[in-house]
Length: 134
Image (spheres, rainbow, N blue to C red):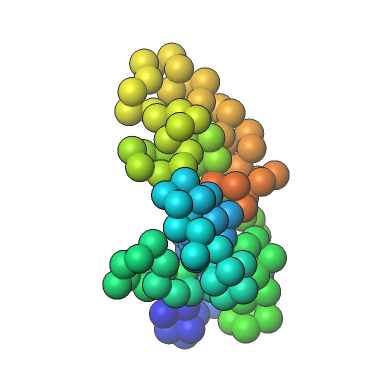
C-alpha cells in the first residue's frame, strides 16, 4: 500500500501514515494473557496474534524510519506517539486514562501532556504518526 501511495504522491507531497507500535501490541498481549504471541511480536512485524484470524502489523520508530527512507525513498519529517497516556476501553492505555470518562478540564490537561510527549516517545503511543515527504 505504501509503495502505491509513494507512486501517486506528487513531488514534494506529504504522507501522513499511522502505524501500530510494537510496544502497544506487546502491552496488549501481556494485558490479555496472550504470552504465546510475545516471540512473534519481538521477531516479526506482522502476524495473527491474540488468537484471532486478523493479521496485525506493528513497527518500531526505527523500523518505520528505515521503511520510509530506505525502501520508499521518502524523507521522514516527524514521528509522533498518538495516545501515549490514554486509551479506549479494552486497550492497555485505558488503565492510565480514558478521555471519554474525563471532564473537559481534565481532557485538556491530558491533551497537553500527550502533545508534550508525542515527539519524544512515539513508540509509546497506541499509534505512531509518521509525516514524510516525497
